[in-house]
Length: 261
Image (cartoon, rainbow, N blue to C red; front, side, top):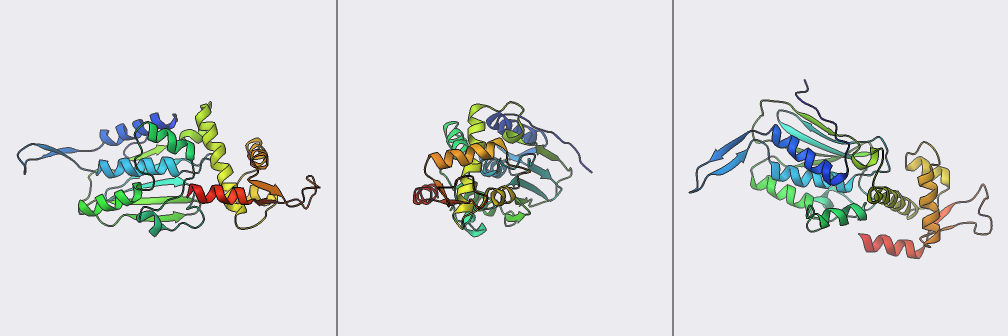
């Protein structure tokens, strides 16, 4: 049974605030008098959740349109999912150790400017550490299909069930801001670079791997921009329209990926 539900369709920063307000609305607050001054104690680990929500919004693959960031409440745990699996070369253990790769540089910059994001790559490491310090079960991270799921289990059962769906966030806004459009474009461009870092691929192969329904305008713009910037090149430069045409990453493209990691 779903106790409550909310769809959030706002710019990223406002979406984060709305999510946290919703979580606090359903969190029970008590008091700890074991020290000389009263200390509020929440029934759910809001500090850890804050880091987890930010992590999901920053790492989401916004090129997967219609794939929302989801936060689900159960009586024994909270599950946070974002579209997009780990980038090539990354492991779950790497994440827990504070090692990370930037999927959305623009979103990272915006969140830093808003003081929502501190040291890059420290989010999951801090979540794991705080959960351990609070005596919570080990934080679980897994890849489910094309999504990444983080599970935070409570030390004791809650008495209610809550489900919040941060629907689409930046990816499904009807009129996305310039920064969000740029973030989506950068996310797709970096995904293309990562795919080409392993092998040369044709447009149809890239579209399939990116799970796009067709050769969208955004895809064409990403390819054109990467070509103009010298980050990728044609395998048949003298025959750009050839049916055998593929794209390959350049040394400049590899250097960009290495610098972003």
